Length: 147
Image (cartoon, rainbow, N blue to C red; front, side, top):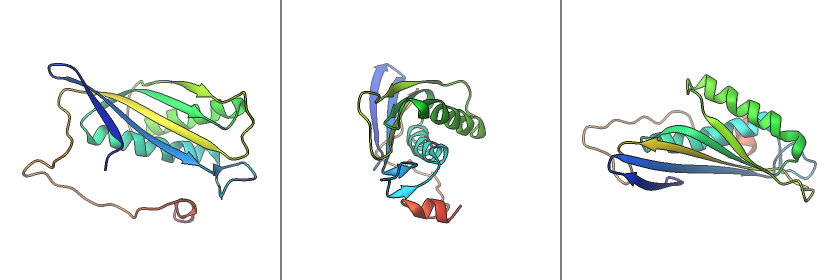
């Protein structure tokens, strides 16, 4: 299942929204998995990017939902920019919001990627298409254990 929504803007133009979340994974004392914020941001963005791009969309905007405090914003944003550079994706705007009214005892981060496509690929695999499974699905601390 893809975590995406598609919206037809006009004939031949689609908006694709893809998202991923990470909760209780980070640097706070009450987190279940302790990991650098940059690692959490990159892995969370990677999932949303792959979902968006697998639907045929090219990303143009990233929305961050930061529940790690104001001091974490720059680190999260920089980690996202590094991943975009590593992936060879051009200029993408990054915006979002930080929960600064309440102190959270666990880390949480949500990332939404917006992309545009001329033809959305969802719901079926075209005839003649190929695919590959690379690596293993990992959850929580497995990601850190198998770098």
